[in-house]
View 1 (cartoon, helix red, strand yellow):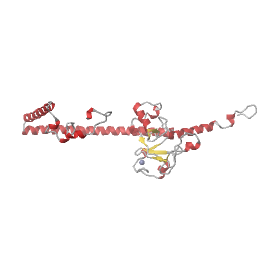
View 2: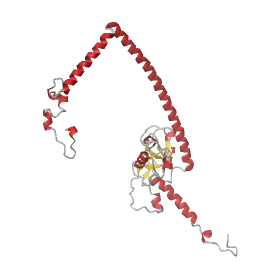
View 3: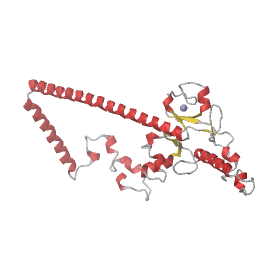
View 4: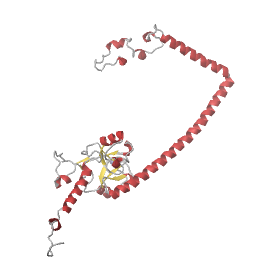
Length: 292
Ligand SMILES: [Zn+2]
C-alpha cells in the first residue's frame, strides 16, 4: 500500500479517520434509541412505554399510531395491535439531572442520561443492559436483576416470571429472540382464550338446558294449580291497566306535581317543583334547554 517507491499513499490510507467517525456514529445511534421515541423521533417524555420487543416510545405517539394506523416507521411498530401490547414504564429519574437546552454531540452529553437503575444506580445511557418487567413496568439494570435473585420486583414487590423480563433496546439478534418469545406468548394466549370460550360455551349450554327445565317445571306447576287460561288472563289485565295509566299521563291535564303515585324525589326533577326556583341557572353560553 504505497511507500515502497513509486506509489504515493493517500491520506486516509495512513491516517485512521473514517473508522473513528463510524464508531462515533454507532455510539450516537445507540444513545439516540434511549433518548428519542422510536416512532415519532421526538424526545422521550413521560409517560414512556415499551413494547414486547423492548423499544421505547412516547405513549401519545403510540396512541396516535393506533388511531390512524399510519406512520413512516410503521414497520417498526406493526406488532403493536392495541394498548394491551404496550407497558408504561416505571423509570427512576437521576437525582441531579438537569435538562439541557441545546442538544450537543459531545461525548459527555451522549453519556449523560435522565434515568438510572433504582437498585444499583447505573445510568440508562445505552452502555448497560436494562430490562423492564411486563407485569409492573418497573425498569431495572441487568446487574441488579443478576445480583439479587428473586421472583418479586425489586421496586414494587410484584411477582414475575422470567418470561416477563423484556430487554430494552437490544441488538438485532436480541430483538429477534424477543420476537420469537412474543409470537410464542401470543399463541399461548390465543389457545387459552379458545379454551375459555369453549368452557363458557359448554356452561351456557348446560345453563340453557337448566332454564328450559325450570320453565317446564313452572308451566306444569301453574297448570296444576290455577290452570293455563287463568294465568294468561291475569297477564292481559296488567297490560290493560298500564295502558290506562299511560293514556292518563298523555292527557293535557296531567301534571307530575299533582300525581299522587309519583315520589317526591321524582317530582323534584321537574321545573314545576318548588325546589326548582332556587336551582342555579346555567350560563347563557352553556345553556342547554334539555337540562332546564
Ligand atoms: Zn415493579
